[in-house]
Image (cartoon, rainbow, N blue to C red; front, side, top):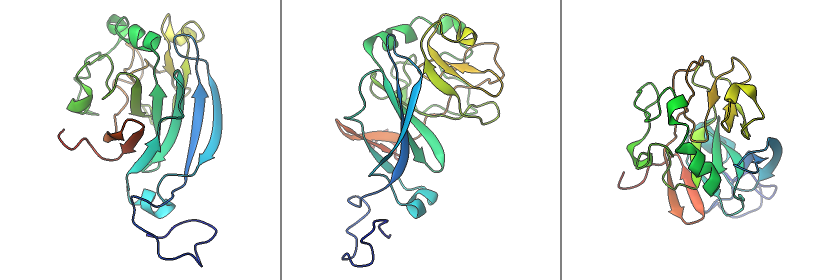
Length: 210
């Protein structure tokens, strides 16, 4: 596997896929209050697989230590946007209150099966309560929703914070669960992922003992 750096023609052979420096385009959305203002700031990070490795589906390692509570980072995996939302305690609290407004609160539908290792608490759909990891593609027709938005900012979300698909109006809560009576019938997909340590998520691999 080659290393996409400016010194690639003179540097010694690359070490291995686990220690290569990688490039990925990411974006950060800053959120506030119950979690959520809607500011997106794209930037380039220095880790992530090479383009060739990504195209082949290589796992992507993400350092989450720099994602402040209430903010979201987007990384690319297999050409898809993967959202990593650092949820605040208030965000988590709200997810236990919006159940009646959801189409599939326990993620039982199987069109996009939710991995069992994120279902310890169905309201959170995550390995750790504070970090949501989902594929940011609407399950209706494949647009990428916007957000997260705080409660009261988007009429389509009613009293809840969450995400809004700009194409046909589907809305999702802060666990990627779709609200009732929307074009999309399914919750956002959860990619395989696991924690390598407290500060690093590997997207593309399920937990060893999942």
